Length: 225
Image (cartoon, rainbow, N blue to C red; front, side, top):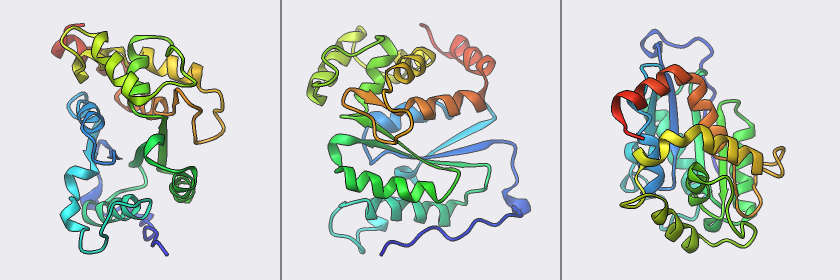
């Protein structure tokens, strides 16, 4: 039986009191997802982003499990991160998952854990994170109900000269949020239908804390649209 995170202290210790909100994000150890979310680290003093895979390595858990047959692996890595780094009631923990890597039952088990804590969240892309990336540039995905990850990855590489990079897509985050939320055909359920994504929920949470002005100022100072 998987252990759950021990209860948070309601009175936050003084050494943990800070003037920013922490977004701890578990991305299954992929490349595009961590690179994308690391980009938010320097956007505003109001936000810091931790990629859990950067903080808690597979080496630290390999003595317990032979394979990454999560949800046990993913949940235990998140719990180990919280034990090591600390998480207050004001902070958020997000699981960014791809449907093609998991069964519905596995994803539901993680979602059930998130339901136990108001600041734990799961956002799933179906079939993969590239659904979210595509919607930064286009309002909808052709043949969304049957689209495959391989096709999406190929098409994303064509959307920008030189291929995908976070700095070319994140300026279009507000469009992605609108597009993804509009296409979400079952907002009440954590699991999106094929060709849909729930990552817009994390995007909205980040923008809410960063603020539209800081977001735009960062883009203006650092990026060329």
